[in-house]
Length: 182
Image (cartoon, rainbow, N blue to C red):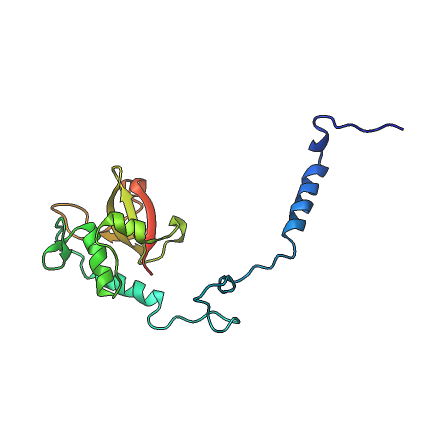
């Protein structure tokens, strides 16, 4: 009787990947996924058959208000540190104002807006999401996405609140994050 001994490469045949898949699928089988509210959360809904519906305005409602508010500021002058239509806007002041008018609290400075916003992947952008740009070592501009690769922002000294396109090489190259407060 001959005893087989392990030789290098012995497990590299086509059976090894199949065995590995079977083993891993057996480990994952019969493991029901628990809804978030079943994890001993004190904020669990009363009914475990359906999630609670939000009361009050919906996310889409807030998005629409923010878009309306920011669009109304087109043509207003840029002013460093500005956050009102009377005096003008810098980029983060424009974001702050548009959200405040919609009843949403957001930080005033772009670095804090980025750190506090819920992150959004760039391939899941929706109108009303914030776009963060970096030209130096930190956030240097923020705008509000309006759809169709366009956004509204307060660009820089001597300019006015305007629309810009992500198809523009400069903006496309410096875009590095997106998020929202909805």
